Image (cartoon, rainbow, N blue to C red; front, side):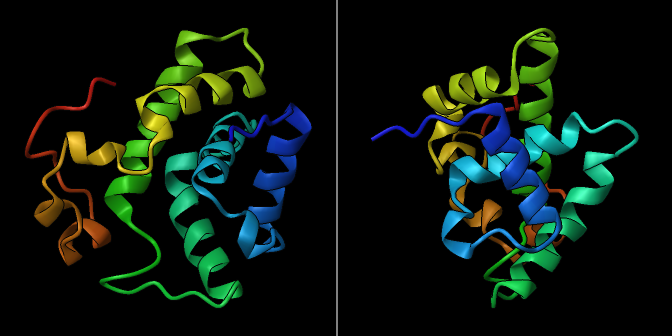
Amino acid sequence: MTTTYTDDDIARIGEGMAARALPKAEWTHAAHWAAALWLLTRPGRDAFAEMPGLIRAYNEATGGENTDTAGYHETITLASLRAAQAHLAARPHASLSAILAELLAGPLGRSDWPLAHWSRERLFSPEARRAWADPDLAPLPF
């Protein structure tokens, strides 16, 4: 089943995550993309600088942890922001809801999409969770 998100839904998800008020059950793969698109389009905000702290704080506020095996993941977050930024740049006049729908309908809509670029061992290493790790299977196309 595919869920359709409106621009208002995307704003609610982004604002809710940033305020640490989004219900944990709503913090899905699609919601991660929605929050990335939302933050990337906020004037005066630097998504690449802010998203790591926002996700860490959200995880902790909703009972999660940020460890070497769970919670925030630097490499996946930065790769996802790069992908979302590329989708925004390719469709500068499209609505966020249209961009999110296209993104989710493609390979990035799968939660395992990074495994096309990183080996499981490298991607899920503590080092890749803590800091950017270059892909070891295939370069990112964005």
